Length: 51
Ligand SMILES: [Zn+2]
Image (cartoon, rainbow, N blue to C red; front, side, top):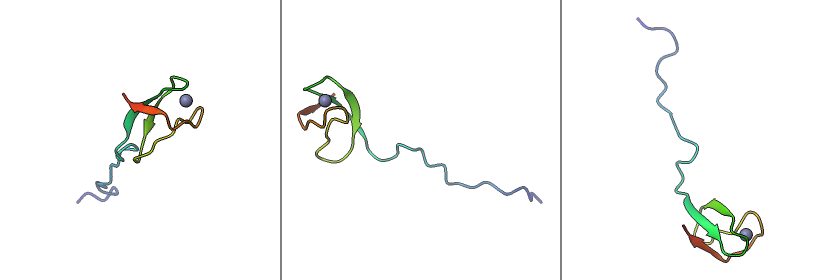
């Protein structure tokens, strides 16, 4: 019998939430955006495009 814990099957990758790559049109920052209205983490601009 295996008594060493056992396989725990919760291998959740940190980015399992759907993040898309975006690029800020203001400052050129590239970032992962989630949600429908991602904002640039650098300059808080909403003027971003999906990369
Ligand atoms: Zn920006």
